[in-house]
Image 1: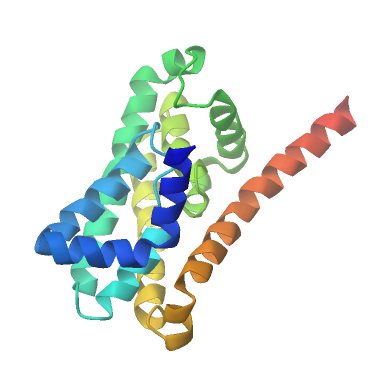
Image 2: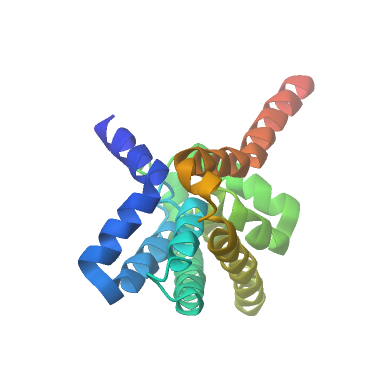
Length: 215
């Protein structure tokens, strides 16, 4: 429970945490952001890490001059793309075994939901899934399990990474330091989280309704 509370506190006050990290680590903040995005998109055990809120907050912080917006977007983009590539190969070589294992940090229902999402949208799932927490962590893994063509995966991965990282960072850069946004930053981050989760919950509810209608 403490882990969940600490994680929510970090996400909702991610702006102040980033300021602390920049103050403490300076130029190494780019490496820290790279690692977070790489882990969130590349490791199936880390879907709980912040993604959308981190990009927005980092963009807002860059607008204050604490980070270079171009370098920020490049580092985050590379981290997100490389993370997906690693996740894809993990799924390709170890996926079937992980599906059959009862692992504490990988909920099988997440894998099944993501597999349904991938089967429905195909390669587009790699782009759409970028904007869905949890789903974006498991989509490349499922693509690997399904032996998606590696060249096709890489193309969708690059396009998805670009359309996810750059717009959110730019929106944060342009609007994150408007007085109203700064004064209500935690609420804005919470709204971003809720909006990004709506398609996920809609899919789950739709699946429940569909299963009940078929029974």
